[in-house]
Length: 285
Image (cartoon, rainbow, N blue to C red; front, side, top):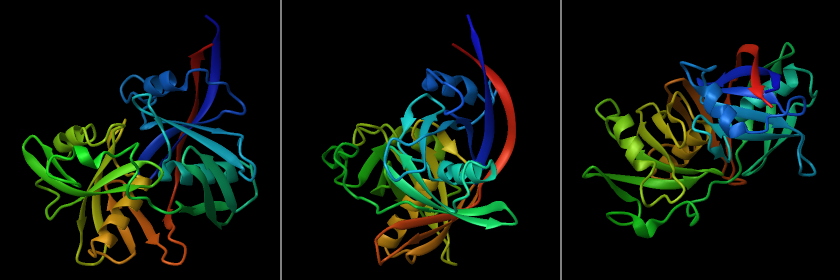
């Protein structure tokens, strides 16, 4: 079998790590299979998934992004990956713009790059406006105890559904440490109320206005951070009047600044992005 040698870059945003490939240079004929193989943390490169950076198909966009989770499923959007792409395209000389428009399956996102000394220190992503009832992703009539109230092994969880271009169910808790996130996240992500699966957030508002959050990502399991999850968490907490419309969301991998702007209704996420390492790997042709 002929082999292709593909150059890749591993990056992370708040610990949410993906493998990035410039698909204008390398053909990945079966990205789902490659995502599964490369994401394996024992036998592969190790990551939360694979991200392909490509040319856009939409007028007005500068680049496109496709994301494949560690299980091979394709995601619609990832805030942490978006920030990493902003750093990637600027520092690798693919653009000199500091306002980059990125085409995703959930629409075009604008990335504002905060450049210091020729390096991207942080990126603010316009995540657009949240949505709260997306029938294709959420079936409230299938909730166990009424809309927003689900059962997992006999335990009731009350949450808020928020779509940030992908589905999230945010559960506000009083004690994060006593909760088995892996056990209940695994059950709730595949609950019958979510025909297409769902990202599950467990969030605890803190006395200083920050929010402590842990995420079970659909298709990846527990991750150190989730950008869209941080946005959904801040929106849900603000709706419940547990925080203001601006809050720092503290996740295992780092902190993301989230602002739900009253003027345009958009959610803006600010955080860093980091290169981890680069390499070459063969794939079948």
